[in-house]
Image (cartoon, rainbow, N blue to C red; front, side):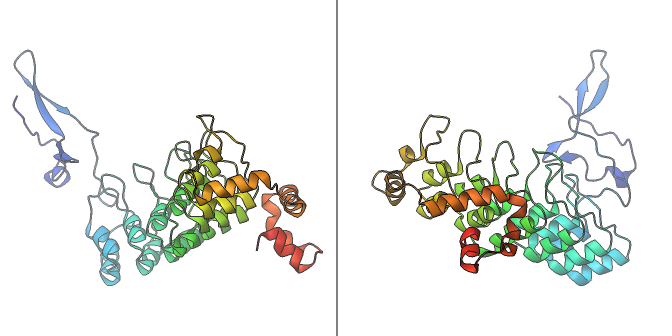
Length: 318
């Protein structure tokens, strides 16, 4: 079968668009009358000056943190919101590489802080992937949304919890929560942020979420965060979850309790078995009930209650 290319637009617009992710966009098919018809095998992209672009010099400068070059390009007329075929903006690139000065320059030039790629990735999500708290704060101060408009889009909070091994990712989680992120925000295929944190053994992130009022038993489907922590044999996570009231009797989709998933003889199993024979103390039960009655949205007001500081710290888990 022959292939043909037809110049249906100007050379400058068509140039470089003959391939889409390594495949020919245009292929010829033989008509039954002997003519050749051109069919496009991928979505057509209209390139408009100042609106659409391939990976531009501005993208490269933002990605590599070359601030002087980036400012020069903006001064020469490059649009801060130029996008690639996948809708990646220079701001996406700067955030993924953690270049705070470039992010500031792009925002000043009018970059859209909530721009999304075709996969729903936002600059804020890229900040969480790279662990750049500085870039994240700039975005949040300039109107970045902590949650995406569609549940199936990637979640910045989930990404921060997934990559939260180092303290810097914990700071990302704290920053998102302080700007109104919902600690119980669920993504269908990922579950809750706490579940994601337990799945990846990030105890510090789990503590931050629980301290902010995340529901300790909300996971993914029939799986609770405790199930996830036990599967990872993370004794530290299990201890934190139990302290915040995790239900040891919940069953997963296979009708198994957390203790049934624990590696035999391991510390995780020992913790769960010891908990079953030694129920929570009265003061622990009171703390859980008081926090529940106060409600997540008012937990930050605990220090204002007329209570001794020692009792306040106990209620705050500090």
